[in-house]
Length: 387
Image 1: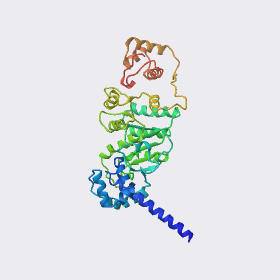
Image 2: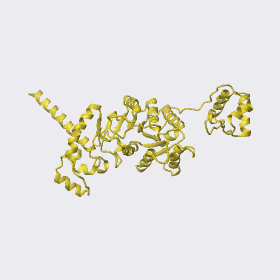
Image 3: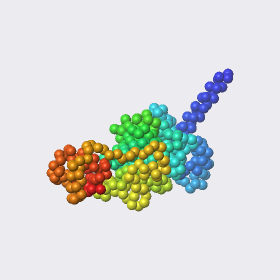
Image 4: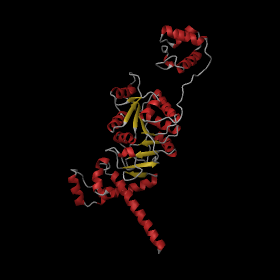
């Protein structure tokens, strides 16, 4: 008899848990109410469960009190939620509600973020700074290298961060891959249900994110249609999760710029990597800096400063790369550049009689030592003026 009572209590607990999950799922099927903006209304109903249990008459009275117009679709949402619960089991998807203790603290502060979202993987529970890294899908190699270098340097300084991005091509995927390389947990916020990965070529990377203690997040149930508008809406979650947003490269318009402005509206720090004025995909970053919306970032120390991070290890030091000893060739190159300034590489090779492959190695050495500055890559056949 005693064992039977324990069994009954276990069954009741499972039934109550399933009922609670079903209501949380149902709330995501009513997107108007699945936002912090309506939290006070839902609390008046007695929480998410109370929202669905509230009798029609009392519910209508509350709607009038809050001056809300709403076609009561709670019953149909609950019915649809039963199918959605099957998808959660099938795809190993979990729910996080604002009523849960592990709901991200910073996200909770934003009025328009979801009361309930879906996730796969692990939500980081330790106290770590969250940094969103966003940018164009048409990322240049220069900016991808800067993102990799910055995260590498932050790791070398002993910092550990949660990197947040959107799993898209370009800067997003560079940020995720660099995070995995540096063993930072990373969150990918998606604009669709977690039963699939878009873009498809990033599926393996998404799996690695989960293996390394990160997470995939979405406010959309598996049954949600795949539409472009969702990708703009998910940007507020990227910004809301993060202490700061770093725009690595962006045109004047686009998702990265939208994320930056949303982050600023939340009172969060915004940073941007400056670029050349003639580069289309640097104009957005330059504009954010000009308007004092974003702080200018040159290297990892700027990000560490804005995030109030104190180095736990000595920062990486620039060293001289001695491809060969300083000699007459180096002096000859420096003398010509001092006299002529910017010089075509073929002309420099002709005047110094240094073979092209040797000359390129010598120029790289001089640039790494800070003796010359190259405004463009050597393949463009121009050289810097002497520093």
